[in-house]
View 1: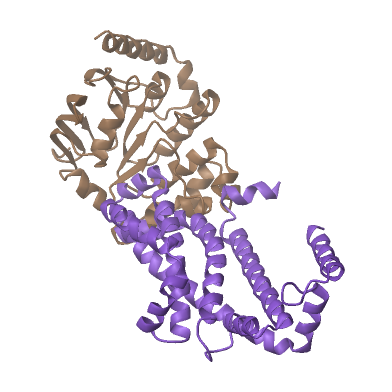
View 2: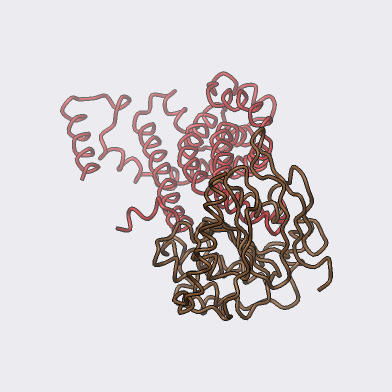
Length: 246
Length: 255
C-alpha cells in the first residue's frame, strides 16, 4: 500500500512540478527506458551483483578467521578495535586511488573495497555471537574434554549465526554502495551499474541515470529478501523467528 | 573392591580469590554407589562436584577418579555431567541433543553404548524426538539432559541440582524417573541437591555439608530397599531418615 502510494505521488509530483529529467525521472519513464534495452540493464545489474557477492564471500571468510581469533584472545580483541573503527569511518573516496595502486585496476579493486568495508560488521557480529554461546553448554563440552575445533564448530559458530545474518543485512547495503562507487571510479572496466551511472551523470543523461539508480535499488531489495528467507530457514529455532509465527 | 577404583577426594579445599568456599573435605564414592551432597545454598556442594568433574582445580588436596586425575577421566569420557540448566543446543533436535556428548570426541567412546532411542522412550519423550528445545517445557528439557548423560555410557554421573529449577510436582516425577534410569545401570552417581526428600529417595548415602566455608557435618547411610519406588516415600523409615538429615543440617547451620 505504502509503496503504491509513493509511486503514484512520485509520478504526479514530477509531472506537475515539471521536474527536469536529470533531477528526478517519473516512474513511468524509468520503466519505459528499462524496457527499451532490458538486456543492457540486466547485464549491468548482474555484474554489480557479482562484485557484491564475491566481495561479501571473501569478507565473510576473512572475518571468520579474524573473529575466531579475536573471540579467543581478549587482548587481541582490544588491540584490534581502533583498526576496525578506522575502517568503518574512513570515507572510501579518500583512499580508493591507493587501493587501485595497491591491488590493480578493475575488478580486483572493486571486490577489495567491498570486502574491506564489510569486514568490521562481520567481525563484530562473529565475536559477540561466539561470546554469547551458552556457558552451561561450554561446561558440558568441557566435561568430555571436547577439542577446541569441536567447540568452535559445534557450539560457538552456530551461536554466532543470528548476529552474522544481522550483520549481513547491514553489509549488503554497505557493500552495494562500495561496489557502485568503486565501479564508477575507473573507466572501461566492465559496465557494472556504478560505471554506467557515472557515465550517465557525466553526460547529463537523466533517463539512463535514473534507470540505473532504480536497478541498483531493486538489486539491493532483492538481496535483502534473500537474507530474510535465509534467516527463516537457518534460524527456525531462534526466538527472533518465533514472534511472527503467532 | 580394588583400592583405586571409584572416586577418592582427600583433603580437598577451594578458595575463590580470598573467599574460602570449601574447607578440606574427604569423600569416597565406590563403583555403583549413589551419593548425595546435601546442604544449603552456598555451602560449596556444587564447587565440590565441579572439582570432581575437573571443571575447577582444587586449591589444596587431591582427587582421583579410578586412580586417575579428573582431567584424564574427562579425556577418557568416564564422566557424564548433568548441569543445573539443561543447556540444550537450540539448533539441534531432541534426538540430536541426546547424542551430543557421544558425538564429541567419538574416538573416546566406550565399545558398547546405550541406545538413546530406548532412553528417550524411558523418559517418555519418543514423540518429541524431532522437536526442538524451544518447543519443550523446562521439565522435558531436563529429561533430555538426563538422557544425554546416560547415553554416554560413562561409569560416573555427576549431577548439579538438575531439578532445582522445577516445580514441586515435576521434581517428584523427575526423581522417580531418575531412580528408574539408575536402576539397570551400574554407574556411580554423585548428586548435589538442597532437597532432603530427593537425597533420601535417590541415594545409598547422604553427605551433609554446612554453610560457607563448606565442610562435612556428617553422613547417613540410607538403608531403604532397591529399587526405589514412589511408595518408598510413605515408609516411616523414610521420614526417620529425613528427620536425621534435617537435624544434621541444623547443626551445620548453627556453626
